[in-house]
Length: 316
Image (cartoon, rainbow, N blue to C red; front, side):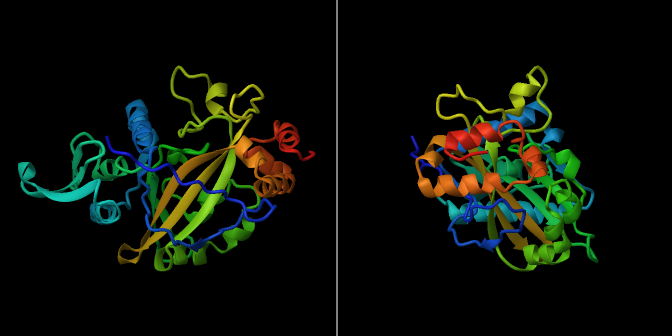
């Protein structure tokens, strides 16, 4: 049995302040695509999403051309082989006319890197189903604000829907976030940097009372919406009444095709772990206290802030 390492843990706050900013830092890690002990459960989550309704989680725009799709799919496949050759390899699949295929030794899957991959709606769906992370592709347009989100494979959404974002530009994608105005004024420069510079890493955090990856705003059929929402303060939760849901976001430029690859990986830090680390606790308390009422609503904290702060040792 393959022994995989424990997931990396990232505490996303560096200052005791809640702010909406690019927060881009040079990507200095060895691997873009992390392979750890959460791998199989993350892949199963993707299978569950696809079984529920694939078009709810995997969406593309007309500007995601077959040529662009093939470039991206092969780029991701080669990156996987480069970073984790013990788990992935590229072969010529003789059963399919010597088409290039990716072998995944963690799951036993073999996927053809072709426009129509058997068992998947597309090769984009197929390659995205091999990694723990969610993937997105943003392309550059001929002028400012003409960039476009053309592909999303989003099976670990943090209360937003892929279907609502596809085809939008950077400004429109981020417009619902309270306090985003300053960042959005730099949208054209940010899009250019995402494609021509980097790669970059950034972290986004939110409030959670479960470790479920899929928090699509619409619950699956037969599931209680309130339970699915999962952001109510849970005093009787065994671990702690909440956890921090952390997104490791990596932006990797693909200037050859005027695009950038956006990679999102979700992890969790229990509130009890944060409370036991004075430096983390104080940073989180400061950030929570500095949130505007609008930001508290956006993060799902409007009804839980007093309890969270009291539990952490701060005052509301």
